[in-house]
Length: 541
Image 1 (cartoon, rainbow, N blue to C red):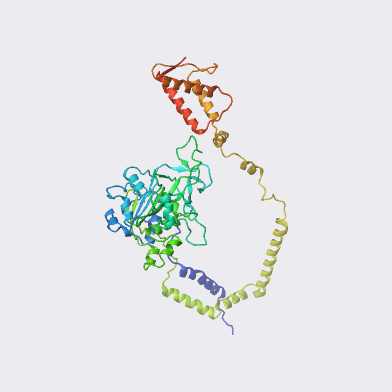
Image 2 (cartoon, rainbow, N blue to C red):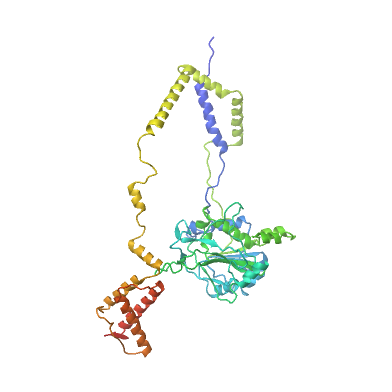
């Protein structure tokens, strides 16, 4: 009697197909994309700036920290001790119309203020900022043409350097500010610490920042206001072309802050540190800095001394986390209340249905098949049905392993032992390219002159060109006479003296030391002489 055997290859294929198809159906779940995306919320794309320049991530941070948005300035003044004003960009809201008694009065009553802008603070905004923090924002865009303290190699993105305090007078704030720090009344914020104690302090990157200028006062900054951060030495204005090293000896002030009365103040010279382009990348610390600023302005502690002072307080938990939970967010001339920025998800469509009943049935069937050793038995039966049976499968496997061993040995001892160039040695073309100058010879010469602090060559060439364009030969031993129809003897003497000095500069062959600041004076005198010759004020004979 012949026993009917099932079609083993068909069963094997069905079993493997079940293993391949079922797990993906079980594992599929809705997932969030890797980046933060914003859905349109009542505004068309034409009304919003590009995504990289928006404040979506900062608004989302306000939502995650459970801040409640305020609709107008009346709600802000209703309860200052629980309110926080955030001004990013346009500072026009700092006016008598919104703060009749001044911004300082709002802070002294317990309010908190974050002002981050690279716009010039003039008029009422400048006066309020001066009374509150003793500084003003100049509005000049700064960059670091020479230096490595920049973000992603961009000279317009200098890194912020914290001002550390090693003694009561270490931050150089002022006599009153140092005295406040000494007695513990200043509440100097610590904004550049990492979230975890085992992590190093992060880097804060700017984007074409401005600088803070301290207003002239006998006692420096107001009581309780401290210098918190600065920009690297060498930052200059974007339009500073004559002497790019002119600001090399200065370090622009970037951030000040502290406690005023019952409230807290933080002033930054750049608001673009909070845009999506700067806050979302993980190779800087802009997100951590924003979180530290909001935590401190909320009223939370930022130093161990503050934590010790609140340990024995009945409301210790509230003082540790902060009591200000209402925010008026002024963003470039408009109040924003939409903190809950929605996230755009990408739906995944499974190829098969994933209803719970179907999944449970398939899971139970696979478990029964594994208990009965169904897959192994069908695999062995399929091997018996192949030509040669199991011995043929073993023989073919030995052949394949032997061929693989021969190929490996040939690669190991023949192919890798062939002659080939040393990978660590640069080819001639690459070595020559590395030694090519990055800038032209003229630019290298100009930078060398600026580093040495002597621009005599430039002044000499400009003076000779001026005499040639004016038609005055440089052949005589003495300069031409300067005749002036009108003017006092002092004015005539001044013109003669300037002309004689320019004549000696144009005729001179031996270089003399002329600093870059003097070059500006030479250029100004040349322009004045040119105007005087053109309108007939002076005449050369």
